[in-house]
Amino acid sequence: MPPELLEVGTVVRPHGLRGEVVVALVTNRPERLAHGARLTARAPAGAERELEVEAARPFQQRHLVRFRGVESREAAEELRNSVLLAAPLADAGALFVHELIGAHVVEPDGTERGVVTAVEANPASDLLVLDGGRHLVPLSFVTAHSPGRIVVDVPAGLFE
Image 1 (cartoon, rainbow, N blue to C red):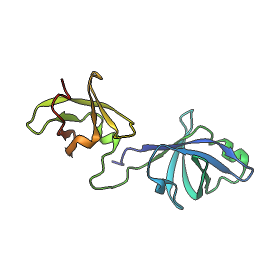
Image 2 (image 1 turned 90 degrees about the horizontal axis):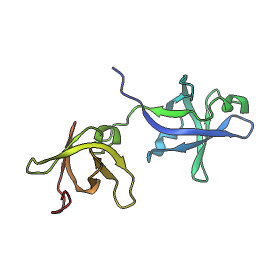
Image 3 (image 1 turned 180 degrees about the vertical axis):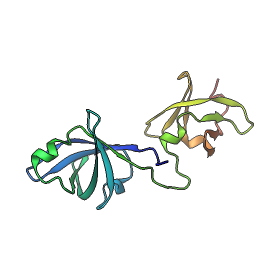
Image 4 (image 1 turned 90 degrees about the vertical axis):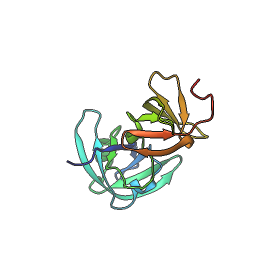
């Protein structure tokens, strides 16, 4: 079974007359836009199209991207508001949001603390949001993880 595709960005709008588009990335992995990278564009209406990155460069807080076969403003316009998807990257030891959602959070002594329902961005450390939304656990307290299970070593009183 092929891996689930992850959202890595969105085509914001066309740029210029030769098929470039403005892309807003939602990943911290810039290699998603490396020459030759393959992405799936899912249009707002649901149609999907396979794309290959021909070139990309930073542009303000976004990127200008040229995809193989997209050579006119009209072709670029067809990609407007498309969500860009890609297969997960292999990265030993990394924590990915799609792997955290639904995982059971436990303390080192085995005390169950809840299930991760979301991951909230935070400048100091992203936060695990546990079911019910009552507890936010900084990712910096994660000491171990395996599929469906996250061990956290938190300061006394965090769960009270």
